[in-house]
Length: 87
Image 1 (cartoon, rainbow, N blue to C red):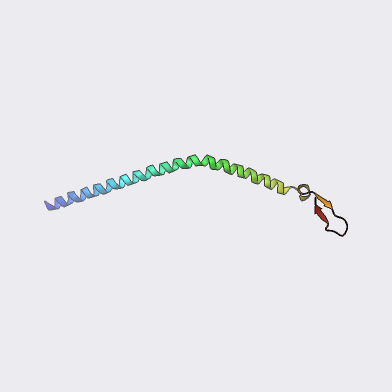
Image 2: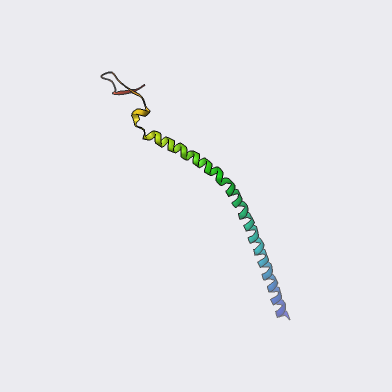
């Protein structure tokens, strides 16, 4: 009878370990779902900020593509001085 008692005890221990593992995995799943919900909330805000920064960068790029003469006004200097001077 001790052999069957041992087997029953081992089966009970295995069942308890399995229950613990199932509970642990269920807790992990709930945590992941919560974190996923937070991420979904953050995505629209990040997207809006990135779109704003992208628009700023495109504006800066367009400004840099303009010829230098159109961006910075210059006048001619008198003879003997530096060729051009800012106004």
